[in-house]
Amino acid sequence: MTTQEMTQEARHEVALKQYLDESPQLKEEIKELSADDQRDQIQWAFEDEAESQGYQPWELTLKYTSTPEEFEAARLALHKEAAEVLGVEWDEYCEMNNLVV
Image 1 (cartoon, rainbow, N blue to C red):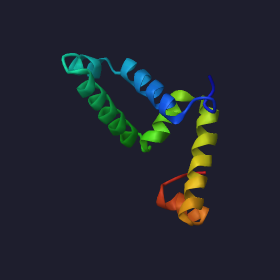
Image 2: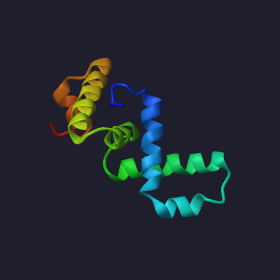
Image 3: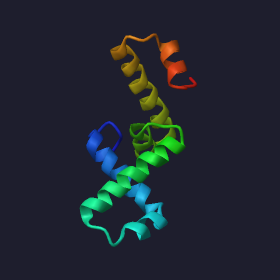
């Protein structure tokens, strides 16, 4: 299934699963928690990981669920869409969001 064929929610679930698979320490730390608490802890850790890499959580989701080429193209397209919605010039938007294009 390609990035375009997956819903945003489905992509995020796949990304969270891959993130957890790559995080054995987190898996160990949360194993005794309820399913809901595990889900919350995974989400928070994922958000922290995104921030540590300089991404928004949706960008890290894209990174986990697409090829590097798809990631860059989709990331830029979504940022351009956000700039348009906000009514901000692209160069200004890039500067505000530390985007290098």
